[in-house]
Amino acid sequence: MKRRGRGIACMWYPIGFTVAANPSAATVKVNEDGTATLLTGTVETGQGALTVLGQIAAEALGISTEDVHVVSGDTDTTPMDTGAIASRTTYVTGNAVRLAAEEACKILFDVAGPMLGVRPDQLEMRDRKIQVKNFPQRSLPLGEVAYHAQAVKGRPAIGSATWNPPTVPMDPETGQGKPFNTYVYATQIAEVDVDDETGEVEVIRIAAAHDCGTAINPMLVEGQIEGGIAMGIGLALQEEILFDSQGRQINPNLTNYIMPTSLDMPAIEVDIVDSYDPTGPFGAKGVGEPTSVPTAAAILNAIHDAVGVRITSLPATAEKVLAAIKAGPGREMKQLTAA
Image (tube, rainbow, N blue to C red; front, top):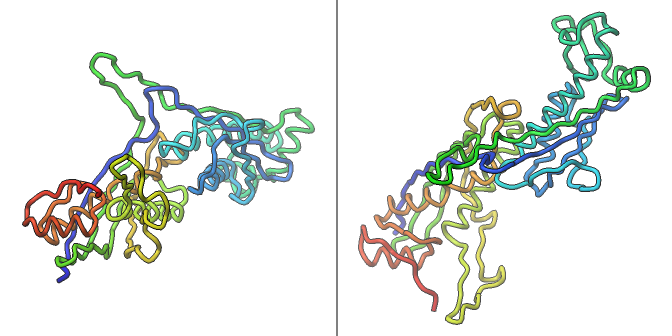
């Protein structure tokens, strides 16, 4: 008989470590046709980082994302980046990109001010134009100003910047300090069906609410959350490395190392919490690794709600769940050793 249960799990996750230097650098060049080139050491691993960094540059320059050409991960030409690690790219590298774009803007404002008869601090960038604040009819094309800056004033519109979360060493005696500059938060709720005759667990639905600061690209954030949940389901129910008595792995391939596929995915409801972090680029923090943190805990809590047994080792395979059910409600099922 299948029994349904629901479980909830909450988490917080640190972004931007501060116990050691954690810098990123970026260079932004505004071209004479009104487009821009962004140089960053960040490596794209499928998470959409370059899209987000291009969006940050575009927002700061008042142009569309399609007008930003991103050059990345080439140590011959791009500035340093600590790495696409620790869910830091949007937060740390994004701040460097924003600052670099603002440096390029300052040059353009200095050049455009006399051309428009106003002070540089009275200008803003909108829709590939440099315009007087509150007087959009007084404007110049961005490309025209960039050309004038380079060919007439001898000041190419190139901005470079670095950003490093303030380094705060830990106290060597007490271990106290500020290890990270900001944190993200999430709650996930899992609904499962557990077959009390076989121990098989089926995840029916997961609702996920994540605070990642301001979402630069909500579609990418939702995709990251769904991908993290897929990883969390594998951690909770399927993925396990098995060894024989000699310490040799007995499932070293994808035939018997089981991972979730699209057919294993439940219905997922994503809620991106409306939030703003003043230390992040345009209020953003991060969303990478935290997406998979609460999933397994929520699923195991749902199993307990359904059949009254607590599984304390992962994955919660059908064998473990059934053995726990047979042992009796409320009993903990420890790790089963492979034969």
